[in-house]
Image: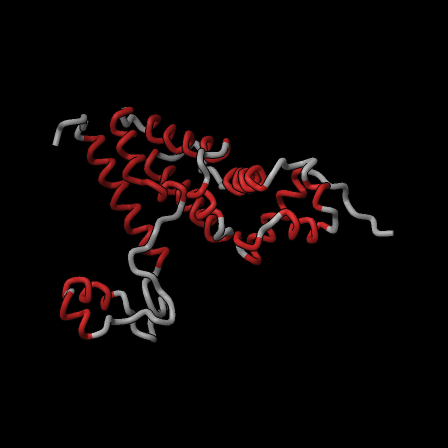
Length: 219
């Protein structure tokens, strides 16, 4: 007789996260999860009512583990650390960003995370109006992910000549993303660099607007 730990909500959620990490969110089902836990599917419903509640719980577990910066840093440093910590979490759990986008409403942990970031801007002295627009500008980047304009992979490289002729400016920029094979970055763009580059540009811009006492309607 095996000495298995008792089934609990936490154990169900962590097993589901491990399954999604290893096989992808598409393969996650209550039946598959029950097999992983070596229980009958009905046993899961004592802890999660359905797959939607399972996904919400998984997201809350993942987002709730994002490391928070200390309170002894300025607002821009604190926001930067918080967002880059979120990015590392999203890279460890690559299904989570897609799951966040598909939820009809933010989960409690996502709301708590967003509230913490907004609080950093407000404690830094940014007005409510500026913070409102800042959060719009950051979009999903505030949670550490964004859709990349230039995807990388085996096919990355200069576009075909016919496309380069039709769209010369796109071709010029796309070609610049194809690094030499000897580069430490490797082929394609360095996603982490691109993410931090854009984040730093935005944070610098937010800081300038704050210093200029920006208000809506003022250019």
